[in-house]
Image (tube, rainbow, N blue to C red; front, side, top):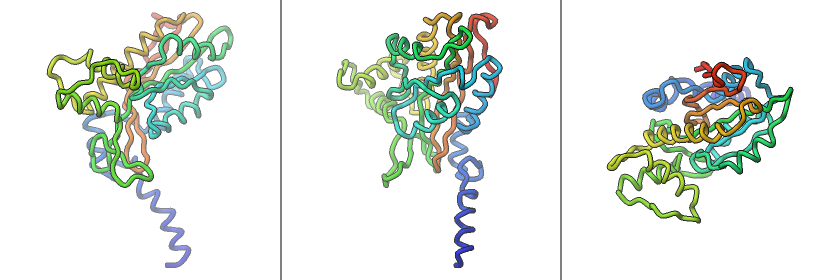
Length: 266
């Protein structure tokens, strides 16, 4: 093989193995569309949320980002994208993306938001995550340096397993405080005997996170703070692809009709 042929192969392989192409890894795409219809590539999601918010006066010069996603390192690309679009970003992350910053954390975050023309603006992205392998296996992800499949989200999967075997850790564990809170929040929404699978519990987590964000931010004075909320589910696919299953997308501000507007972008 000549050097030019080798170079040609090196250039065509990344183009051929495009994980966003539905013809590549069809089992993954089938699982994605079956359980998360309407999911979009993360870069498209970020671009559309940024563009959608420009109509309401949000831009990187007058807005601070806030993000609540899982601590898992494979979730970091979304954090990076938020910084890329919105600049400085307040870290609200916890296990599974649950919002545990509380009033004290929010007080710190809001004090960091810029004031431009008397208005303080921020964007708040909050969501759990889940992995789907190239074979369509839910919850499985192959990480660099590991020979066997790992899991995402491990915190939620642990609760799925507890429910499946009927052995729940109900005591408050001060050395595992975040997982204790996640477990309590999820159990409070279930009826006796329910045993959701990982997809179901991830969607349930997304709903809980959505409600928690709304309740936390409702304490702010909307004549001072204009903010946008984006929730959903972050999905990790093969070849390092990342997708978002959109849920909430709304803007709050006292000058808006009813003080709140749903943004149609997806």
